[in-house]
Image (cartoon, rainbow, N blue to C red; front, side, top):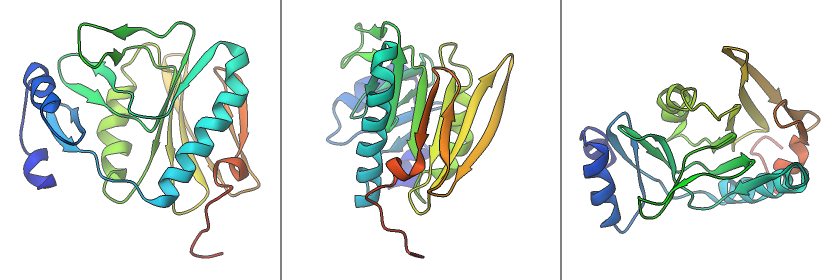
Length: 193
């Protein structure tokens, strides 16, 4: 089913109408449809703890953290996604002409990777997210080990950095924030431990 759907090309208009009639969530990336897989217990724990850690640190900086079912309008012609966590610093801009409304100006985007989504998160989504003018950071969060790969805007380019191990901390330059990986992964038990 997933392969059949991903091979199907759709315009954004077709996708938005089609998705509104589906019982489950789908993403449109480069005009290809992808089903949103169910999440594991580890994914849920990481998602909650990451959103909580970001909220604690960024709320005082005028940022809002969205952690559940927020859809991003990445490219109005080809790409609509559901990141695991999105952060907006400043006033959130939603396109209310689309239902449900789509967020247009994320500052930070976090994707918790899984075997079924990692390639798409690391390739197609990375390329699409880099085109969003408001975005200062895109983060790939592993769920099978304490590892976060950060892609942060640096001048006209992007800088990739890895933060690994429970003793390290994720450094987010804009907005200024530091989160120990031990907080993000505090309730996760890894296979090798």
